[in-house]
Amino acid sequence: MAELRIHHISLTCRDPIATERFYTQHFGFARARVVPLGNDSQIVFLRGSGIRLELFRATEDRPVARPERDGYPWPSVRNISFEVDNVDAKLAAMGRNADLAFGPISFDDFIRGWRSAWVRDPDGNLVQITHGYSDQESPLPCRPVRVWRRPPKWISARSFPASWRIHTSTRLTSNRLTGDSDFDRSEIEDGYGGKSRYIGADQPTG
Image (cartoon, rainbow, N blue to C red; front, side, top):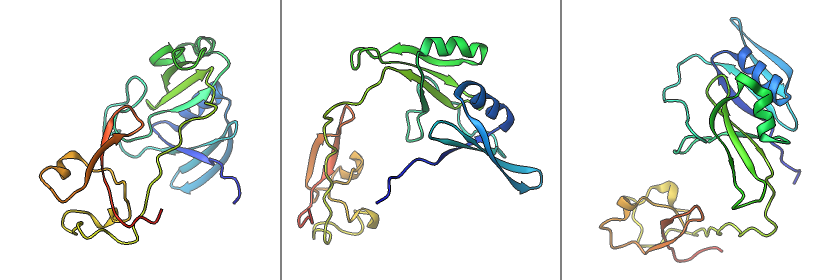
């Protein structure tokens, strides 16, 4: 299988020109292509080091408040991140365009020399700038997921959405489990600092 590469990240912008200026001036992007859509509308691609940005013009206002600190706490894209030689020097070089949301902070307890700050682009999206990160030599593997050949007999259609039937280790909310004695319940570490409830299954394929 050919190696997969990230092609682009799409951004919806109040002012695409201001957004383009921000990323070209401070993060080394350059205009790569303009795709005319008619009615004076267009998509602009910016090319950076190994990644592209695709800029759309917004047609509606943001429905939620802009993110704070290092990103939204709910499921979302938390931020995008760029590696720089020195976080503090980069902030100084950006001057008044460094709309600081959080940091800079050091993560020496995890990796000596790792430091990050989060700034906002013209649309309020969070951009992390970081230096000093390094990969772990032998990180713990992801917990394997087993798949059923068919749902166990103790699962009924009314208590379990059809889309969940193929998963042995499907995460369920605690209220779905409450009061249902048919489920084989267990709690395991979820790898993100807490415990999650999972259900077991018989007849796994592996």
